[in-house]
Length: 473
Image (cartoon, rainbow, N blue to C red; front, side, top):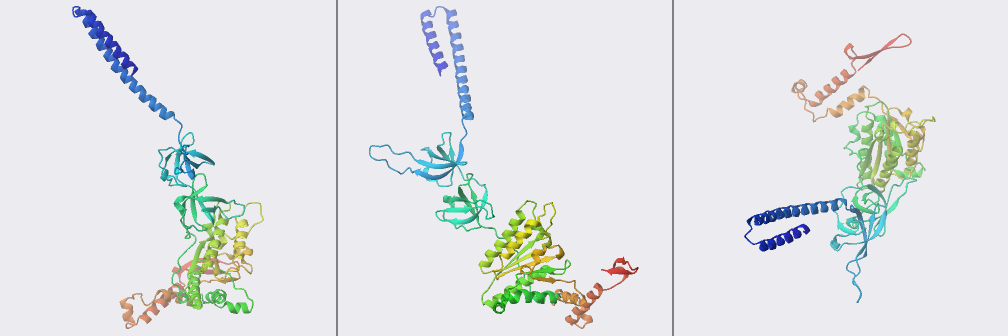
């Protein structure tokens, strides 16, 4: 603007000079016209330079201005609705905000919509720590477990493990009326003072809950000796507790199913859960729902120190919670030797040295709960620590043997049931009698399984005494 004003003043002087010279001197007039045109051109160029310089200056000021900080609105200290006393100015609105680990009493820009300011809202804070804007909520943040719900919109969060420290946080307005239970998770603001979002406890872990199919005992082929021992050990104390109390006998809380792989240990465990729940419901006269926790021993092993112990605590805590709800809880741990291996006394760190004591302590804490059953399975029971298998913890060891010929026929009879379509030629052979045709199939299959011939030879063993033994498949 300064250069434009100077150019305009110069043009005025040229006009006055032209009036003095008059129109007689043509050469002087041409010089004045050329000078006027030159001044006008330079004036326009100067205006463009000033405009460009102003744009550069504005951009420079924006880029070099201090960045706004992001804070969290905590509460009002002086609400904008407070009226001033007569003769005094209206008080400025004041609020308490958190910024990292610090709290500030801040002024609020009048342009900010006061109705949007609530506990837990993200706000934009300038260099003077005044609130100058409201930001949308953040979709991310750290999750932490709720340990206890306290009065006054307060929550105690943190782990319950010994040595860990919990802390108290406040609910944000967004979840002030939300029902929160111990064990749920909440998302905290960056300062760790407010719970912004609620997440219900996830009970169905990949190593936890599993549905139990309809599996009565007659669907389990063979293993009658093992089934009878399980029913005497597990079912009777739960169905007839008064008899055990009369003779001052404590019910067995855990059993170990051991034997070669693929012989029905997992099937027997699920059948125990189904049948015991059904008979317990009939005994009590009210429906009882089972809670079958299927845990794979290798799956809960973790390379991080203390993580496997945390999973063990979580398993038994879930069992206690469900037992208090009146459900019949079954903890089924497959391949138990992987996580409960015998402890060593060597120098090297062995995870069993800490997992086994944790498991035993949790198991001892289940003694007063009558509706919790622990079932361990193992292919190598000699690898399991003796402290786990001692009386009072795992009181019964049930061997699940390989099926013999009669047991194989019983298993085939379960799967070759009357709903399986049969070959018309086979039915014609037995004059349309499906039972006889099915029996022939079972006997022929069993005969083939136990057939010893050269084409079924698997391994020939030379013994120390000079004799040989042939194994067949």
